[in-house]
Image (tube, rainbow over all chains, first blue to last red; front, side, top):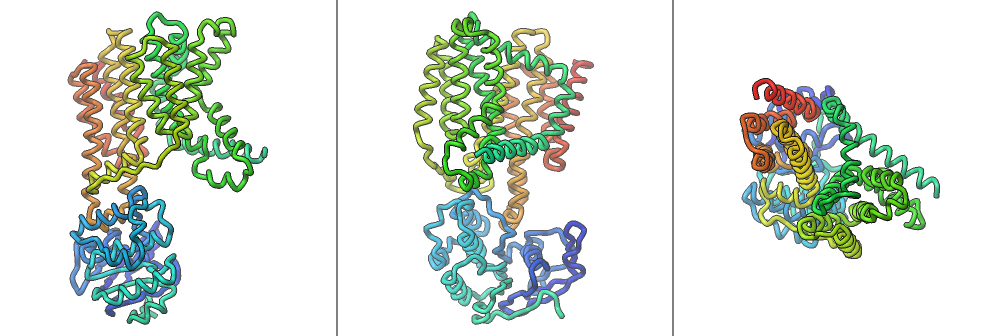
Length: 194
Length: 358
């Protein structure tokens, strides 16, 4: 369970979250909100990528100094160095978190032939795949996927859904076309309660 | 097609304006500090070209030629993306049915902005045809200047290799014409070799592996600093030979310039830390990346300082430059816009101390 307590996040003087509280209890949650309301921002805060906020973010009632140890995030907000190859990016993640190369996932998403491609040369679909692989490979207790199906072809989306169905971690995601994810037990939860 | 040429000129001007904006504060400060030397700098260029036309020493002529070629490479690299309009290169294809226009525009803008070539051209015109025939090396030099500049636009690796050959030949060849003919031949071969995308990958990518890979991918950020340090030390050596009584001041100034070139490397590395902040955070490597960049830049600055000290000698004030390096680095990271101001303050402080207590 991920709990947000009294979160305040200000961006250029405009508060995106003002004393915001929420609880994400379900094992698989699809966070819903219109564009620009702060889903991606919230995800970066939960994942510990952005630390400039006030309030508390708890994981099963426990606050982490380094949340990225338990949360992996796949999002456009994490900009990979564009001159590295996909393999080098994944190698850095392997080294940082002592995890193995996710050969199965790479194969499932048909990404093998792009491992030696530089990030700057990846198509938007393949860049999304790299983000997903880079996050999922860590096998953290909490996984956050920001628009996982954006730019992916239909076949890849179905393969991703099948793969996620085998995972046991808590997954938070945002998606504007969530039907296919609902089939594997994702529950809708609005970003802001009614 | 006139609209295309208009567009290229506008794009070039826009890029120059942006560059000017980036360097505004720095240019202003340096001009204010050294404005009395600016006419001497222009005169120095023509003095150097004069040495090329008429000199008793072949070695000196070759050294001057190489110095000019190196300097022009640094200048052109700075405005290369403006000349080529690199960011919108694919857009050109939507306007053109023939690539010739693109090359004409490229070369016209290159000539327009190639100040050292224009200076040589002015000199050649002022000499007149009869005198020019007596000094054909100037024409060869101008040919080398233009060829190297064109090579730099389309075949940067060949241009770099040609510069290395040019440097090596200074110490081997004892004829000016042979020197230029060899360089031109090397450049001609370099132009014919199609660039092959080579991609060297650092085996184990870590914090330092990342910086190594960055330098491999963007070698210019280190190469121009090596070039500037070489030119700074080389010019200082010439001045020190001419005015040994002022050598301690000039050598100190050279080390201060060196501090500026190398500590500003932090601007490039810190950009990588900031732009990919989320990525480093996600790997819990943000602190490590920050520390490693400080260490790397400090190491480069120290090595360049050490070379200067070995060339010109060491004293209390020379050591003080090394001691203020962390201060300079801190200013660059915390307030990059204050880089010129901090450097200028350090220059004034150290030079004033030297005058008062040295």
